[in-house]
Length: 161
Image (cartoon, rainbow, N blue to C red; front, side, top):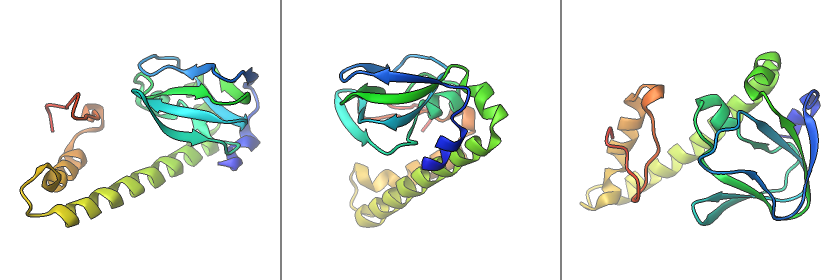
């Protein structure tokens, strides 16, 4: 995502000391962040699910695009520097090339998730356990209107799926 760095004008360059939260899961900021340097941890619940070190890594894009609260907490694991865009929606309207870069990134993530789920479906088909339901889950996700898609887990399920 280094290509996004070419568009980081109009944002605020901000130093983020180690241990500082950049985003809080469940909050709404309308902000988009681009990592310039450092190391950030993406935390879902109590688990670190990703570590970001690549300049140009994006934070807050899903919340902005879905107009929903942030889906994870992001914490600086080391002193870091980010660009912050206070009105991310306006920034993306003004910079359609960045919106296209984000769309490609999200499409890549979706492709990886679909490939993984299809592999699980193949491995556990006909076994009668909860993993054999992956096919039904994929079909349900595909058929839901975008405004109705809501992630779930063992702790919080989406009754529409």
